[in-house]
Image (tube, one colour):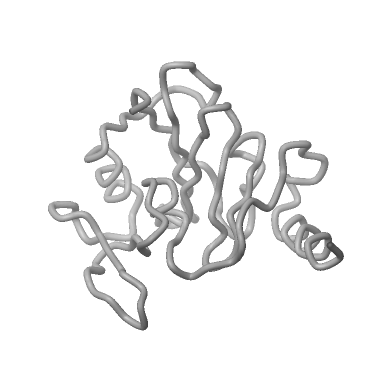
Length: 157
């Protein structure tokens, strides 16, 4: 129990927007099998990264065929368009849609993705660390992931 409290404190120190978020929870053990982009894409068995299509040390590194191999936001938006996502105006919950948020650094390189769960709360995978639940995508903006660049949505499957 004490370890989990310490882990939560460490996460909040890196993402101060989570301070006071009643929906902030750690929802998985740490794993390097998948990253935030894959988690938003609904994979928990691949590490999704541009230019990657190989396996190393039991981890599958993958990028969708036909999407440009680029670290910039447009390539990541195109990857999500393959899954039926289109840009939208806001992050607020809509019953018929699921949403994702893509984050960028100052150079417009994609740094993170978060996705909305059916209950309207958001989930993020923190690199090779844990999955977390949070109230909205803007709470994890900052030094690590930069800013939300766009919100995209698609009809629930």
